[in-house]
Length: 136
Image (tube, rainbow, N blue to C red; front, top):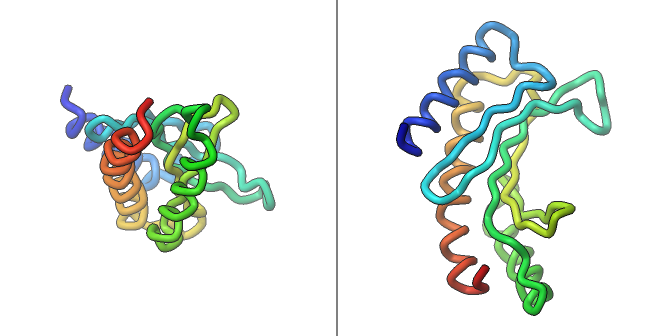
């Protein structure tokens, strides 16, 4: 299965879950676009656990310890260029990820497709850019 078809299959399965009202907490689906890998997961909203969030998260690179400050500044600069649609973040394992989320309340199929595809596309682009700039 190619990366493109695995993303297409994941989207198809997510859309089926949305249509059947089964896109609920605990759903987790691996995704890949190019060299960027990650997942789509449904989690409780930390501020309002009665509601859920669909989160898209793709791994970009490990934080290089010797250039961590420069990388963090660059990530903040890049966050501003994403216009609130996604954000770079660090995991507890010192990995850079690109993450985006949307409430599942009133989520329509087009919004689900957009958040998954757009975030995956950006992650695939920026993993190459950031690895070239900061190494692994």
